[in-house]
Amino acid sequence: MGLIKEFREFAVKGNVIDLAVGVIIGGAFGKIVTSVVEDLVMPPIGILLGKVDFTSLFVVLPGQQDKLAKLKPADELTQAKAKELGIATFNYGSFLNNVLQFLVIAFAVFLMVKAINRARSRFEPATPSGEPVTKQCGFCLSDIPTHAVKCKFCTSDLG
Image (cartoon, rainbow, N blue to C red; front, side, top):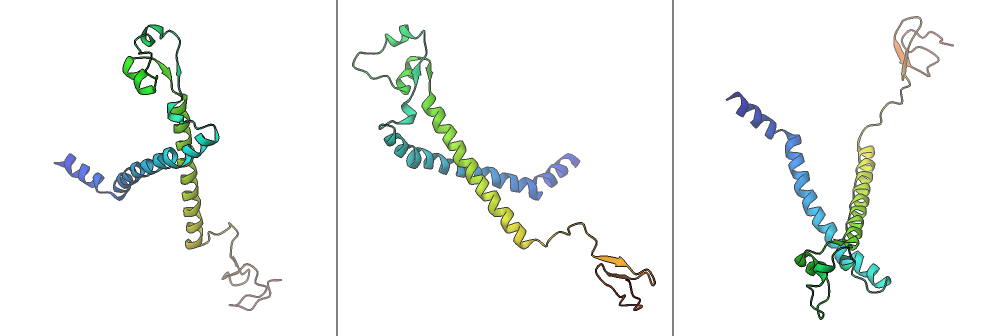
């Protein structure tokens, strides 16, 4: 029974639940970014580059002539058709899409971390700079402000 109790304590700790929430939110965020890249960013870039759909950009690798012969003359070779026929292709368009998705996600995470750090610095108390804020009076040994010239306890001149 000790193992089950330990597991239950582990599973309900805040950091495990936070991790689960992060994974779920991350999955949903990934779908949004995929849609942004494929549906909003890549079409204008494709138009600028001559009406190119990046996901359809690929090169047939050498040594595939016997498999290409199975293709009917009227059929156009697409990635889906190449996969169906077992033709090896170099899919650089899909790679470009994935790189762009990564860059969008990385930029979004950068902006989010930047905003969190800005908010954290506003709401957290300022950390001491390492300089002492008090010193001891040489006469009565009381703690007094560092810049004091006279002790408030014994009224001694600190010079």
